[in-house]
Image 1 (cartoon, rainbow over the protein chains, first blue to last red):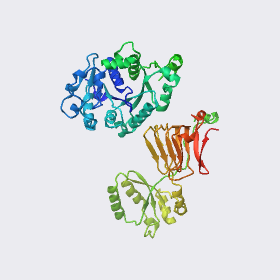
Image 2 (image 1 turned 120 degrees about the vertical axis):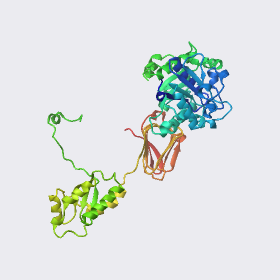
Image 3 (image 1 turned 90 degrees about the horizontal axis):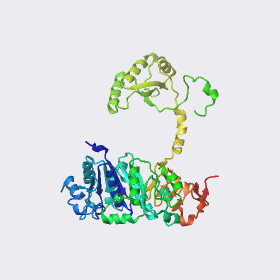
Image 4 (image 1 turned 120 degrees about the horizontal axis):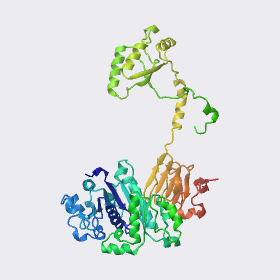
Length: 275
Length: 244
């Protein structure tokens, strides 16, 4: 029997919208499950339900997260088992309610129940710094902060890092801080080289947290989103491979960062390979 | 230890070392010698604060003794010692009293401690002036949207102050990282305060109400990443290199 106390709650957050939180949540959770970990991914974007679409399970939603918080259904009725990957479940958001339905007590009760059955609980945060985002990060043990290489996204991520450090449960109770990981999504090395985009180094200098993965800008991401397939399942795509590396790094493997340079691969590999 | 010369390393280490040190001790001002009254009051005190009387060292002050014994040998220091020990106090010495009483105390094994109150009277006013200024130390980066204020003293940040963050102090501001947000030192009007940072990329800097915004800071890009200080000279903000 799995000891629920060892379950890890991971929030995927960013501050800014449209940077790739849900794409990252879907691929990250799928990757963990592919590697044999019992994983559940929860959509905290109540009222703007998207995760079910990206995961391709929108036609199987009966009950949702808010139904469980309100005691209108039990977890087994609401959890959707993924058909492609074993060990993977999705807990969809409610489309008809709003974020006020997320109470701290309710979220805590659901997370505690999930801790009994899962090793990784991935919380897909809505954009913003209001109730939905605060509830998604409040109980987190670790955080994937998703950023795009542009100044407004980086500043919003900085804001979210400040909130993680001051308003999470770990911060409020004086426990060890939430472990922070940077995910730099939609990165185009040739545009960074031209100075159109912030470079990996620029973003790291501003945010100052460890880099977990760089996801290259890729048309596959859009195609797979529309098809309801997490991009990590798209064999042969750069973005899928980058998410695969990201999951392996999260689990402790020491892999060099790929897809961050145009030509001078050797130099940057040495620069970021050790992280 | 690493710098110890071989000459010292070769010598055998001495078994002990004497060093002066200052302690804060509780003083028991003895008013009378009535053993029963002392015992009753002690029991009451212990009941009030049991945790305080846990082998607490005390100095017995004899100055306020209302009726000093006519003959010094009427003073039973051994009995008093046992009484105090029994209630969780550890007498370490006596202070004041007549030379005769002090001699009896010494015989009972209680050393005489110097009375420091005569010099204390002149020192007291200095104390408040020398009260340590409280610095606030922030061990993490200050992120966008966060505001940190150090009232009455200096603010020390062990990390970067991000764009959109604000650090404020009545005293100086020291930033062991880049300053990319706003820093306001001497906000209660102290014109002597300064701002120190490892790289000046600020949105706003202010000392005692005089401020400059990013546009007016105009540092050479080559200055980025260099330690800088900001201070007031003739009521104007001046930005200087810290490195020589």
